[in-house]
Image 1 (cartoon, each protein chain N blue to C red):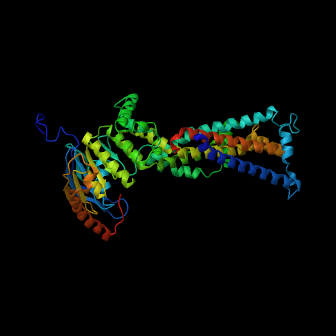
Image 2 (image 1 turned 120 degrees about the vertical axis):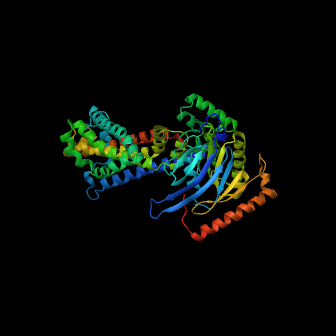
Length: 284
Length: 269
């Protein structure tokens, strides 16, 4: 800290996240519920981390903490050496950490191109005309030029999610936070989306924090899969996925993939059984 | 060729519902005429359709009001001006207040109980105060027309704001919005379907509050026309006034609906 001449490690590469003993207690309604407890993980800049765990185990709570939607009760969340959330400091949402939501959040009242240009316009980074030009060319680059003037509700969920990813990436965020973004899609659309997401990832190398309970999805996408325990959520198991990139769907049938899946499945199954036995209601 | 085959079924559906709508009118007129003709209960006190139409289209109407008399249009004009003035006022004040109530917890906690207490007071109960407090009959009547429309607008706008999906708000903040950006780009358009539901209701209640107001304080206007014709036992003119109110009320609601559709093309799938 004393010498500004020597940059601390990781200072140049943006998007490194430290989750240090993150804790979240809900106590506004009735008895206190510990949703997340002592959740610790170091995420390197440009790393693709997927968190899996039983439904309602507090994964989304964690993501909301990073995004700044919800204050955390204890521990701290550090982004590139800067504490963005702790017990005493509420994080605020910002364009350096953009969320892609479970059910999609494209503004239905704006056309696709207006949705994509929205970030640059409200951040006053570009003039309106320039933002729209940039948005059009970003859409064209991923093959969505034809739907630029369409309203989101006229498009399939798959196309809506692709637009939403373009809307996020045009802001050049440090981190992408994805909360089961493909949950509503059918299996075929989902596998196409996985390849699309990985293409974008390979091209941009943003840090990705991805939540799911689909194990195939987790292993196919991730550098590391983190299995979270049922309530309270803690890190149960971390698994490195060394499948080469770029990945193709054929890898999902490889021996290596299946071995990884076995390992994740064992850990998740144990937690699912715990959650089942406890029979607690689901938490967001 | 392909267009014609695609277009045909839709057009047929539109024609058939139009036909059914016409059948409803015919049925209504038939029942009305029969009731009057056979003097069922006290229906002979009512004019039949033919005499209404004859009076309405007469160049020399017996009771002085028809399509060819300036007095008729003066009444229509006076009522329409009052309704639109009250409606514009209800929109201009009601939408911003509704957004504030939906958006700001403190504002809602302070103002909502008050609004809920004032809202059930019927427009007619406001008549004495309106006449005492406001100078001139015109402003008193506009106020009476305004009051119910205002509450319909405020409450629906508030409901629209509170019903906006949280993820739109979160997405907007994620993308770097300030509060005003969110109000303008998310809250207002997100609440628009509810706002327009409110405005349609507002237009409806504006017309019937107006007529009540004109019956008490008016010297010109459709409500006044009806009351005055009642005093002078001109039932034909009463029915002309009622039908005119129905038609103009329908047209003004249709206008609100049309504007809503224009502003919400994104809703069409």
